[in-house]
Image 1 (tube, rainbow, N blue to C red):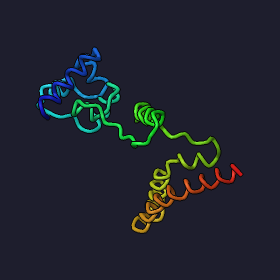
Image 2: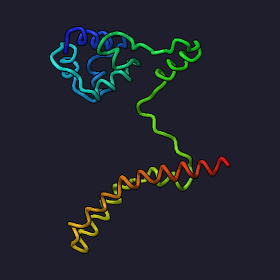
Image 3: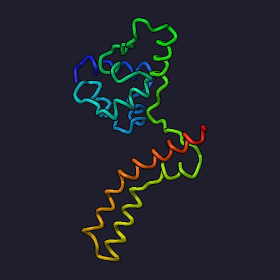
Length: 161
């Protein structure tokens, strides 16, 4: 890591009135890791950069370069369109979960199908000693996640009519 980025990390922490211990607790790393980042002896990994960006309310690009990202606007775009684009960038949350309608089909979209596959695999293996062919159950996982969003979209289309 270069010294400018290390200094920027230290300055951002100080600007937000955080000690190294407080920042380390928020991110889930040691105080020594924060110290190493701020001295330029180590670099935060991508996950930690995302967490730092969320804590400081800036982009990863701003952490690494110090420059705010450029917003690409079309030459004929009206000012209201460009402000909407900027607002969308600022209001994005990494931990937002998509909202699903509360019907019986939304249960299957959020259902942990891979867990069910493991259970079926273990039952077939232990009860029927079918370990070798039972692995084929795992091939159904992508099919499950491919089919159910299609059913959801179809149901919403018919609901609108």
